[in-house]
Amino acid sequence: MPILAIRDLTMRFPGVTALEALSFTVEPGVTGLVGANGAGKSTLIKILLGLLPPTSGRAEVLGHDIATEGAQIRERVGFMPEYDCLPPDVSATEFVVHLARVSGLPATAARERAADVLRHVGLHEERYRPMGGYSTGMKQKVKLAQALVHDPRLVFLDEPTNGLDPQGRDEMLALIRRVGTEFGISVLVTSHLLGELERVCDNVVIIDGGKLLSAKAVSAYTEASGGLLVEVEEGQEELGRRLAEQGVSVRPDGRFLVVDLAGEETYDRIRDGVADLGLALVRLEQARHHIEEVFR
Ligand SMILES: Nc1ncnc2c1ncn2[C@@H]1O[C@H](COP(=O)(O)OP(=O)(O)OP(=O)(O)O)[C@@H](O)[C@H]1O
Image 1: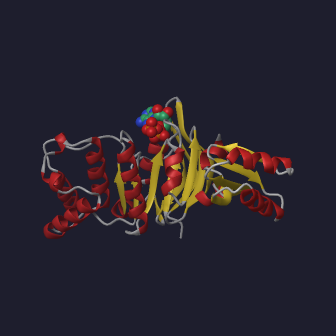
Image 2: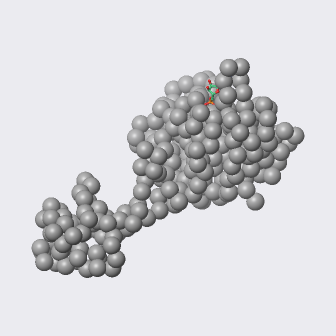
Image 3: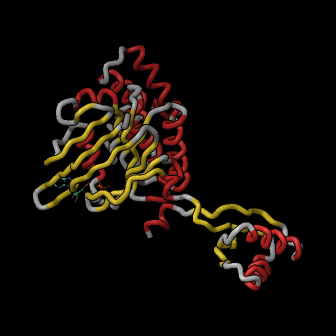
């Protein structure tokens, strides 16, 4: 069963159409929702949580209708909002325990679950300190922990890498992947950066100006391009020249040569070229597109 089924969803604010006749379905797993700022990502999440009635159209989340079953949806779905919303005088532990209690967990279970999720997101001793003194990375982790504390089946993460430095971004992306794989929780994660979603998502939905551009498995965007990627330790130029002389279509791409595959003999030509020139072959594999190239 799809976790999201969206049909003809339109949301108009005075003077702005935030979403226009959006239709797509999402299967379980980690799904990226990508679009430039203002594309309509946050609006879509509010609608899917049953918090904002759309102008027209329908949607189901985990089989529940957004129009009539918002409470059931929010019981089963965790939400990490984009903006900072953490009370500065309260510790992460107090905050996450409180939200677990609000979700209906008894006191002891709430304390245990909060300790577990804070450990999973990588907050240790600092979880007892007031959150006002936290770095952006720590705040993002608390926001993720509170989204997970009631053991949801699906989480909506709105721009979780916003404001993070490259290391914090990598850590957050790895955490998101773990939520999907180790914890088995489906994820809808938004970003305006296509490249980072490619690394952690099974599927990517792209919206632009509230309209659907594409909804596909990451593998469909990045499928083999029909070329071969060749890397040698030294002598890339020599090898390129030799292959070109033999009529092989080849071009340099950074430290690689990209060779157009024209039948089995292309492999033989590369092998013979490497051997005859006495080069060390590091890599010979199918070239793949990156999602960004497809949309450039
Ligand atoms: N409550 C509102 N009233 C009027 N316009 C709104 C409202 N909420 C969103 N919009 C408009 O709808 C469009 C989509 O906004 P939305 O916040 O969903 O985009 P987004 O893709 O999440 O971007 P960002 O990452 O910058 O938040 C924007 O043009 C925004 O100005």
